Length: 157
Length: 124
Image (cartoon, rainbow over all chains, first blue to last red; front, side):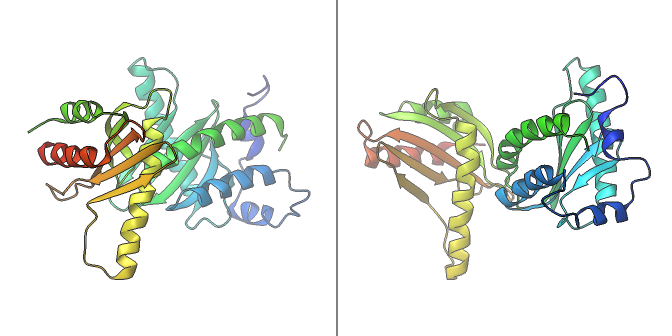
């Protein structure tokens, strides 16, 4: 899903990306914002599944690409944690000969973090409260991942 | 006492059974399922019906009824969907049995009675 020159996450989120940058980008005119379809997908997932509090797209390097603007908390931290979860999961997959990373869910007593792979270089991270229907979240996330993969491949952000 | 496999197999022997699943409604994930082939994906049914169970629980909460759900019956044009909640045996247990039946072949009264028996004998 990427060309020979440079990976997708770095193209989408430069290393100097800051929270201010993310906050500013949501002010863009909806008609001209090239990331609007991605934002709509994230918002859609949050609306579809009760209990989802934050959705974001991160690079596998832990840098934030895009976050659902209504999400509470610090999206840059979540992006980094998603990448860390992906890292250990990918290591497990490799060591056990189970192929490429697909998904990892961390369940805590009062909430969960689900991380899905979008192609090889991007991740979808979903933060949810303790009442979330995890099976439903996985079901709803599947088609979203397909669409996000196509959008990230097509749009030059 | 029956294990999950035995209980699911027994439920599938009911006349007109389409599919059966044992579902954890804290997560919507299945502990096991049988059937559904070509008619419905039982894992999707489990996730979707988790929301049904939760909605009914919320309704009872709003109504202020200090009561529990024994079972929920949903009648479609051609199927019966029967949801039977398991009485909590351990703290943190929140499970239900989900059974889909063909309406024209199943005996609802008998199915409900049998499902109660299966549930009482099920040891998770």
